[in-house]
Amino acid sequence: MSQQALHPMLNIAVKAARTAGAIINRAALDVEVLKVGNKGANDFVTEVDQAAERAIIETLLQAYPDHSILAEESGREHGARESEFTWIIDPLDGTTNFIHGFPFYAVSIALAHRGVLQQAVVYDPTRNDLFYASKGRGAYLNDRRLRVSKRTRLADALVGTGFPFRKGDNFKRYVKMFEEVMQSCAGVRRPGAAALDLCYVAAGWYDGFFEMGLSPWDAAAGALMITEAGGLVGNFTGEADFLYQREIVAGTPKVYGQLVKILAPYSRVIAAEAAPTGEAAVESPEAALARAVGTEPAGEVPSTTAPAPAPKRAAIRVRRPEQG
Image (cartoon, rainbow, N blue to C red; front, top):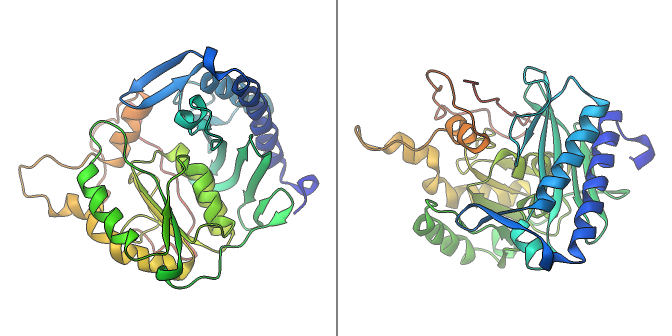
């Protein structure tokens, strides 16, 4: 699929991503003068994140004013909230890398229609690499079709991950699963931008990936890239419902299965099911997203522990949090 033959909505997403990438590249020339704020411990935001997000939203809503927006920095402030179309945006995934001059960060934009991911763009401005995918039409890097690697054994696999870094993250649980994965594979890498990590699985450069604590805007575009490249993506128990579980595992079909076997005991879903009565419950995905975007879910939040369809051949669904 050449870039001239892209779906019209994907074309707009590419335009938005390149516009944001130009803003990021200009700022990277003099990163020392940037104003850097904290959203939380080790969770940074810069004026570049905000400027890039504004440019993306302006480009998308100029073309599709009746669409809704879910963005990392502004939540659901923009667009038509009740639209069947939702753009899921991370204007600068890898902000910590960016402010240190470490060249591994990206713009991530995905489009969901009625909760199913349809279009995805991840743009790496430092390399001018454009990853893109349309549901049912494959995944591409620039004009090259992507396929996940042919590796079938975890012992031969290079696996990407992301370390927990926010206050409240369960670091001890992560260290245990990291130790198990590290001793079962050929190598583990942690560059620090999940959107690009997921694209690297789609490109066959990684054979697998896992991380806890990701938000929908971190994972949405990369997840569609992987499934369109012939890989699998799900939560730690191997179910397709992962975007709001704050846990993700991905890989070639065989490596994915072997990673799930290791990671399933560490799943938040299993932990929630096993929690004795009276113990503090694991935060629901909807509540976590509502907290992240500054809204409160109304009324009862549905249980998220019931098994979802197996990820193979399953559409990736993006559930909208209830609005207060």
